[in-house]
Length: 255
Ligand SMILES: NC(=O)c1ccc[n+]([C@@H]2O[C@H](COP(=O)([O-])OP(=O)(O)OC[C@H]3O[C@@H](n4cnc5c(N)ncnc54)[C@H](OP(=O)(O)O)[C@@H]3O)[C@@H](O)[C@H]2O)c1
Image (cartoon, rainbow, N blue to C red):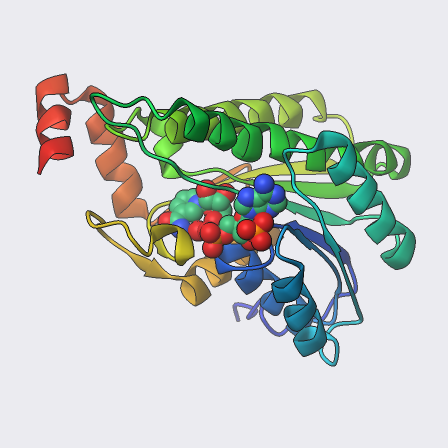
C-alpha cells in the first residue's frame, strides 16, 4: 500500500525563508502539522509572529526572525540565531522571492536588481548560513524554490527568468559538488500558483492552489528528487516554447 506522506510525523528542524505568505506560509503550515521545529524568516514580522503563534500548538517548536535576504550578513545571522534556538537545520527552503516586470520602453532596472538580489543572491545567503553545519554533520537537505520560468526567457519577465535560471544552475552545481556527501539538494520549479505574487497577474494558465502545490512539493522533497517540475503539462508547454520562434513568443507577450 502506498504510504500517505502526510501522516508521517517527523521531528526535523525546517527553516523557511519567505514564510510570511504564499508558498512559504503553506510549507510552514504543512511541516508544523507533522510536528517539526520551524524557523521562519521574512521582512514582515507581524505576519511571521501571527503565523508562529498559530502554529505553536502543532509544531515541536516555532521561532521566527525578521530579515531581508538582500542583506547577506543579516540573513546569515538571522538563520544562525534560529539554529541556536531550534538546533541545526535539517531542511532549508530557500523560498523568498519577488517578481518585477519590464516593458519595451522601460527595463525597470531597479526592480530587476531587487529581483536578482532577492531570488538569486538571497537564496545563496540562506544556503551559506546552513552549509557549514550541514557539512559538519554530513546531513541535511537544501531546497530552492526556482520556477518553470527558469527554462525560457519569457517576454516582460527578463530579470525574473534570469534570477530563476541562475538559481537552478546554482543548485544543480551544488548538488553535483555535494554528490559524495549526505547532503541533498532539490530544485523545485512550480508553474502558476495562486499566491499574493500572482494576484495581479492577468495571463495565467494551468493555475494551482497553494495547498495542492505544497502537497506536491513536500512529497517530491520527501522523495529527495533532484528537480521537481510541476504541473507537468506546464513544463511540457515551456519545453515546446524553448523551440518556438520568437515571433510566436512575442505575440504571446502582446495578447
Ligand atoms: N506563485 C507562483 O506562481 C510561483 C511560481 C513559481 C515560483 N514561485 C516562487 O515561489 C516563491 C514564493 O513565492 P509566492 O508565490 O509564495 O509569493 P509571495 O506570497 O509573494 O511570497 C514571497 C515571500 O518572499 C518573501 N520575501 C520577498 N522579498 C524578500 C526579502 N527581500 N527578504 C526576505 N523575504 C522576502 C515575502 O515576505 P516579506 O515580504 O514579508 O519579506 C514572502 O513571504 C518565490 O521564490 C517565487 O518566485 C512562485
